[in-house]
Image 1 (cartoon, one colour):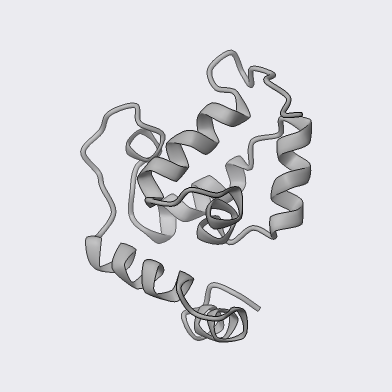
Image 2 (image 1 turned 135 degrees about the horizontal axis):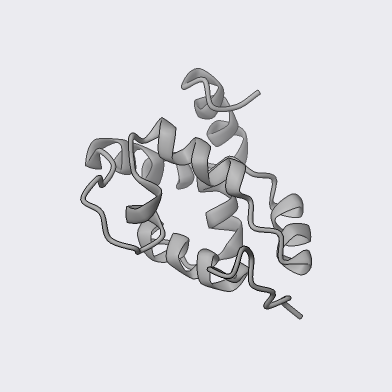
Length: 110
């Protein structure tokens, strides 16, 4: 069961997750976690607690030179570079081992 607790009176975890799925063009929580660079287990634990991973969202915005307003569907015209999104999509389609290696090469993983 997902906690639908309001954070700072503005968003629930589900609302943020739904916005991220729409912006990333993905359907699952695991896909959102991968896009953010967050371990899927950590993502699901946060979801259960209703703890929005703001630090990962901010980091994604910085890496992609995008505004949080755009990412969270609150307007704004600072969409990320489409080439970066295409690369991220291609990396997400790789097998796990190759995806990790690609993330390391890009400086986004360990």
